[in-house]
Image 1 (tube, rainbow, N blue to C red):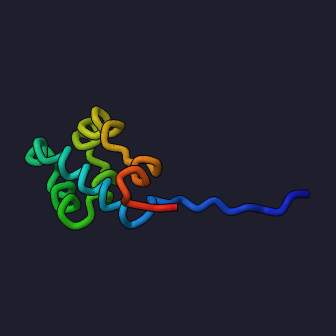
Image 2 (cartoon, rainbow, N blue to C red):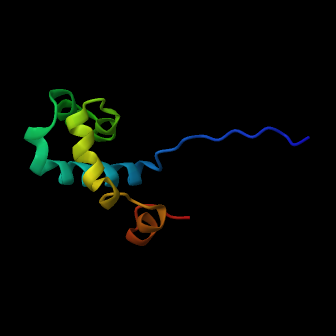
Length: 84
């Protein structure tokens, strides 16, 4: 029998979260007025929470471009945001 393992969901290091949040804000700036009021507030307070929306209109906007703003760990290393 193998020992149990625990998988932890991580949203990265603080620097990569900031970089992702900055990209998310930049992408959503042109459509800010089309977002729900809740998502507009979340964008100011904690941009990563915008992605938790249940609003179908917001989800449709996110589905179109979400893959273009992902920040990979290797990208963070190259840009100096994180180190080994």
